Length: 205
Image (cartoon, rainbow, N blue to C red):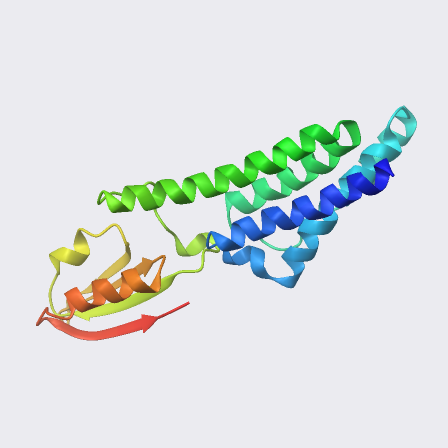
């Protein structure tokens, strides 16, 4: 009965972390592969820990066998790597004391949501708690703007990702990212008043 309870905690804990990430815009956690990984990885580490407990020879053999295992796909961000370690630790903790695993799951979920709420609060004050990036697997709404001259409103924005100036035309290309469709539409309505704008391309996610 205790074993079944532990397995349920591991599977539900992994799924809870997966949903917490996706609800906070982490697109990389939405795939089938990641969903299955979040459910299976804690179980694997739990079984490994249970198997090698009290057996030094088996422990050394298991370490040697696991050392040949590698992730064959590139990790998109530091958060993704940390989440893998989190899931592994949950599996190990469950084999020692279930209470620790539950505390780790709850603590991780609280931190994920706390950072999101901190960003919303900072935005309401006209600031930013963290910078958004296309390289971290976050689902973003983007806009590309081509202008004949520099636009101060864009240059000073925290949402600006890249800018490229072509002096031969002359022409400046901006790329910006927004966490919500509403934020992008509000900025687009402001920027459309600029006479220097040649083209605007919008991508909603």
